[in-house]
Amino acid sequence: MAVKAVVAKCLTILAVVWGSMCGSVLAAPALAVMDFGIYQGTAAESMTVYDGESASAYIITRLVESKRFDVVDKMFIEDKIADEQLSVSGIIDADSAKRIGELLGVPYIIYGNVVDVSLDSTGGSYSGIGLDNNTIISHINLRLMDTRTGKILAVVKGKGESSAAYVKAKVTRNASIRLGNIQVSMDAVHNAVRKAAFDAVDKLVMKKLVL
Image 1 (spheres, helix red, strand yellow):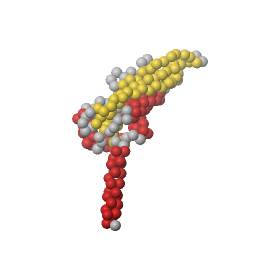
Image 2 (cartoon, helix red, strand yellow):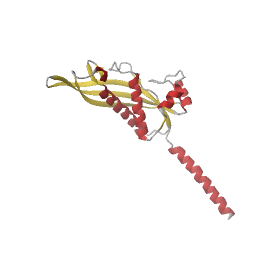
Image 3 (cartoon, one colour):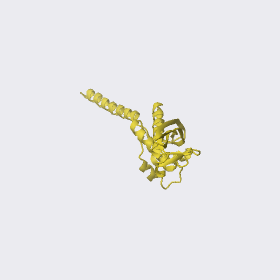
Image 4 (cartoon, helix red, strand yellow):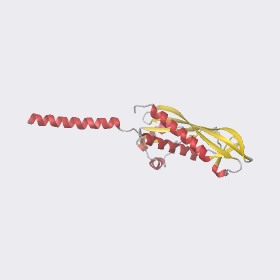
């Protein structure tokens, strides 16, 4: 009986240890998404930091949907770094990344830029009103960095396209953005940025990195 009890106890301990190890292996790696920058030279002069923040929000959404990562809440990030003199938008250096990792308690961060928003358009008319059929194209560069080492683990480029018809005589300036010589719908621009963000995350997930 004593031997059986010892064996049973050992098996129980092994089961607990094994379960703990499996849980550690299967646990989703924690990461934080920084605000994305707007790359200098992006075609849309009206693109602002706000649009970069929108890109990061789209990326967070897609990461959560993937269930591949444990994503830190954006409000938590803002509260933690509010008093720190850190670069948290666009390109982030290794020293800043290390400090961000310490503040947020995360081993990984995602950061990058909206690098391009351009327009491919064809003209036409309807009932005498000028009409442009536009394809808005956006690209996003996304990087995954290890905050402990400053090493960039992955770089992906996402592409998004959004089709929109713009009636020149009818669009309100507040709801539009200038691409080259043409005003286009802000919703169409954001749709292209969203698709580029989703594409970038999908490409990152497909890499199946061991973190």
